Image (cartoon, rainbow, N blue to C red; front, side, top):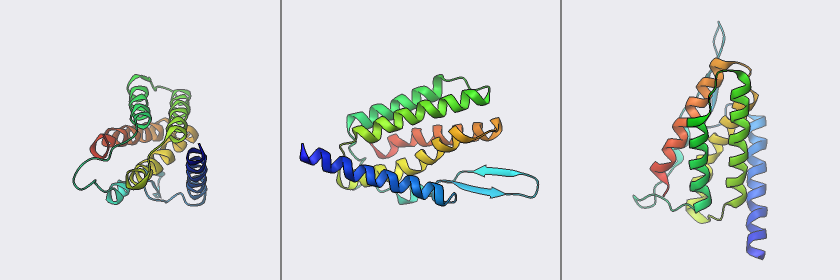
Length: 158
């Protein structure tokens, strides 16, 4: 029981520090916002993938709750119609709920947990952007980026 409490406290601190970094630096790894002369354009990069490591050439073993959460997010992405801004915001809110469940239920430790954090950090940022955006074109790009990242989960985790 003490181990779970300590683990939860550590995860909470790590999560809060990630959220603070997102608010302080919009150009953090995983998300780059660039401004052009004509308009603001949101571009996503895959810098997080450079930080990912394999487990001696194998995928990391993820806990069942994390894998089920990623599958639930993928299902939301596939089944949610996004025609209007409200649709995108609702999708972002639903993804955020699943993300919160993944963080809450995580029992991973060590290198597999560290790599999960590398994977989740930019995903969390993208979900937050989807919840806050007010432009359907930008929201569509964010959705596409989230979808691609969710698919890449299975490259690194079992």
